[in-house]
Each structure stands twice: as C-alpha cells, then as structure tokens.
Amino acid sequence: MARLRVCVPAAIALLTLLRCAAMAQTPSAGQMTPEAIGSAIANAAGSATTSDPPATLVFTNRPILVLRATVLGRPPAVRAAGAVELLNRLAAEIPQGRVSTRPYPDGVLVAIDDRPVFVVMSADADPLIGESMNTKAAGAAERLDTAFREAVELRTPGRLVPEIAIALVVTALYAFLVWLLLRVDRRAAAVAQRLTEQRLAAMKVGELSTTVRAPMMVRRLVGVIAMFVGLVLTYAWIAAVLRRFPYTRPWGESLRSGLIHVIGTAGTSVLDQLPNLLTVLAIVVLTRFLVRLVNIVFAAIELQRVSLPWIHPETAQPTRRIVVLLLWLFALVVSYNYLPGSNSEVFKGISVFVGLVVSLGSSGIMNQAMSGLMLTYSRALRVDDFVKVADIEGTVTNIGALSTKIRTPKNEEVTVPNAVMVSHATTNYSRLASSDGVYTPTSITIGYDAPWRQVHALLLLAAERTAGLREEPKPVVLQTALQDFYVQYTLLVCLEQPKRRAPTLNALHSNIQDAFNEYGVQIMSPNYEADPESRKVVPRSHWYSAPAVPPQEVAAAAVGLPGDASDRKVST
View 1 (cartoon, rainbow, N blue to C red):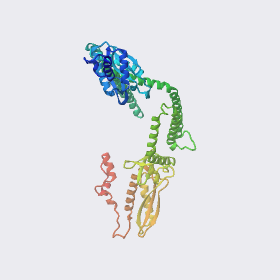
View 2: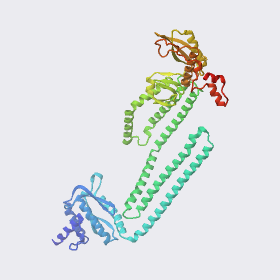
View 3: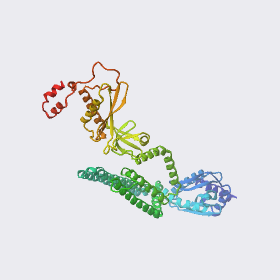
View 4: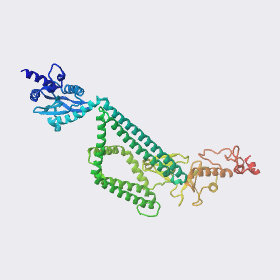
C-alpha cells in the first residue's frame, strides 16, 4: 500500500507535468521502477480525454509537439507549461543528459537520462492526419534532443563567443558585398551615360528615341539585377546570423529551408513543365515569324509596291494591326493548355475575373472601336486631310482605334471620339482638291440697281487678284437667291491648299471689298432694307487711312528705302 501511495503521486506528476519530481518530500520519478511507471500511466490513461484547444509545447523557441489530451483534470496548456518548467531545471542540473523514449501500452514516456519529462498518450495523437502515439513520441524526442542541447548552449556563455565572432565575420562579408554591389551599379550607370553621350554625338535625327532608350534600358536591367542580388544577399545574411545563436536558430533554419524549398520546388516545376514550355516556345516563334511576314506584306501594300483588290493603301496599317492581333490571340488559344498552371483553380479564377472586367468595361470601348473600324474602312478621311466634322474644322493628324485627332487652324488639337465622327457628316476638303478641285463658296448681297453682269465681273476680278486660288477649274459666280430687296451672289473658288482655307478666304474677302469700292458698287450684306442718301462705298484715297500703311511703304521700310511719293499721296 505504501508503494502504491508513492506511485500514484509520481504518475500524476509525470503525466500532468507538475513539479512534484523536484519536491524534496516526494520521491523522484527516476527512482520508480518501469513497472510502477507503467502502472501509473495505465491509471492516468483512464482519465485522458481529447479536449480543445490543443497546446503546443515550445522549448528554446522550438515547437516540440502538440498536446491534445486533458489528463487528471490538467488541460493541454497546463501540461505544456509544466514540461517547459521541468526542462529548464533539467538543462541546469544535467547538461549532458540525452533524450530517450520508453513505450508502454497506454503511452510513450519521453525522458532525459531516465528522468521523465512528459508522456504522449493516444488521446494526444490526431488520427485525421495519420498520427500515432509512437510516431508522435519519436518525432517529439528528436526535436526535444535538439532543443535541449540548444538550451544548454544558451546557458554556457563560453560557447556563444565563437558564434558571435562568426556572426560578425558574416556581417562584415555581407557589408563588403553590398558595398561592391553598389559600386558595380554606379559603374554601370556611368558607363550607360557615357555610351549615351557618345551615341548622341554621332546619331541621326531618326535614331534619337532608340539611341536614348537603349542605354537606359541596359541601366534599368542592371539595376533590377543588382536589386535582386542585394535581396538574395540580405536573405542569406539574415539566415546565417540567426543560425549562429540557439534561440534564433529555428528562425534561421526556417529561412534557409524555405529558400531551399522554393528553389527546389521552382526547379522541379520547371523540369516537369519543360516539354510544355518548349511547345509554347515553338508556338511563339512560329507566331513571330508569321507576324513579321504579315508586317512585310502590309508595308509593301501601304507603299503601293504590292496591290491587293480587297486592301487599299490607306487601310493597310489598321488591317495589319487586326491581323497581328488575331494571330497572337490564336497563338494564345492554342498554347493555353500548355501554359504552367492553366488547369489550376487560381488560373481559372483570374481568367474569369479578367473576362468579367472586360465584359463590364468593353461596351463603350467596343462602340468606339467599331466606329473606328467603320471610319477606317469607309475611307472617309485620311491623315493630313483637311475636314470639317460638326463644328470642328482642321487637319486630321491621327486616326486611332478609339478617337481621331484634328488640328484646327488655331493650332489646337481636338480629340473627337470615333462614335462622334461616325454619327456626324464629315466634309473632306482635301480628297478631290488635287484632282477635280473642291469649290469653296462665299456669298454677298447686292441691290437690284446694280447690274448683275458688273457684279459677276467684280467677283471674278477679286478672285483673279487673290493668291492661293486655282486657275482650273475656274471661279464661278452664281445668283443663288432673288430676295425682296437684294440679289444674293455666290462666288465658287477652288483652293490650291485646303489647309490654308482661312487665310485664303480672308484675302479673297479683302479683294472683294476693294474691287467693289473701286468701282463704286455698294455691298448690301447682310440685308437690304432701303436706299441710303448716298452710296456706302470707300473711295480709293481712303483705303489706307491711318494707322493703315500701304504695302509699298511696308516693302520699302523692310529694305530701308524711302516709299514712293505717289503712294504716300494715296495714303493721305
């Protein structure tokens, strides 16, 4: 009976990780026989139940095992805390101790030099992940042996001195490598700048963008490589320093094993996917060859070296873009199944997300894109044409997939959405200007008392005096309306340069006023209501009233000669 009274308290201390093994009034568990320990484990096993939450036994920053059972009313957290306290005491008392396991029918005892530390029971194992009592105890003993030696090392300052020296050497080597990396990066920047300056000195105008970009691209590439190497060095330095000291050694080992695992996984994945990658590479190479062939063919069509009945020179460039896009889309569809991870749920989820975003945001874009295609293939206008769309008049500078840019005579750049271009009538002043000629109208109103033949002659005389008008087809005068009090005359002229429409019409209007004033014919625009007491004309002697200056004097002042006396007389 006395023997049983000794075994039961010892079993309670053994299984619940209490401190009774260190109490002077209680016999040590190491003095118990294996039979007594087995009997105590069997008695305690009857009360062991799996409970939540589980607790992880951590010693010297290393996880040893996960306890899941409540034994004799002691939950897993209490068992873990008691084991840690006992291990700290054993590390100070028996620094040379070795971890061992002793299996029993109802549990596996983990001890250090035959001094029990904790017991792994069946209730501690998780059958859902395939754990068993024996395998869990064996793994815990292996991890505890490493953690116990590190705890002893942590309590021995003499053993930490060499590790501190090694950490300092590693840190010095890391600092030197980072300094060397920075020097190489700065040297590469200097070389790139020098090469840029040398090429700028001997470059042509058309090579400006390529010449400037090439060294900068090399510089950025070197910078990216330097940053990657710096990150690798920093990662390796942190892992090496952390592994020097017992408490941080698990972190260093996890960093090293994590890097090795990532590299190994990446290498294995690359080897596994190598046949698929080669297939994708072959598809890309073939597609690039076809794209280059398409570019050559359409460039020849655009330069009118090759003629195809269904492609015009002005539609060659947009057609080339469409064909190239279709080729790459077809290549993507063919190579989709060969892409690494194409069958994964993440890849499928990203594909669905991208498709959803495109479908939600493509309604307006597709409207503009289809309008751009209609605008391009209808050949309503080309780059460098002078056009009028709605109330916008100017020169077309770019016809894009979504919008068209027009530069107005005021040197303003107006961006017009292609849908607006299609929905409004477009007047093209340049399309027939070089062949048949495009008539530009200007109208005036004259009273019925003026001979219409004289008005015709005066309008033709003003057109003859105006520079920038074509001789063929000849200017034409039409009587476009017979109103109640006046006749509306319209002069049709062809401009040599439609882009100079505003200055040419300005000169024409000036010459019309001069011609009608010269012959005393009154212009009744905008409306004729009654005959004035005297004709509203400007006599020639007042054409250059101050501050106006005759053109002869302007030309004479430009060359430093005195103006003609007759001209000065007219101006006065």
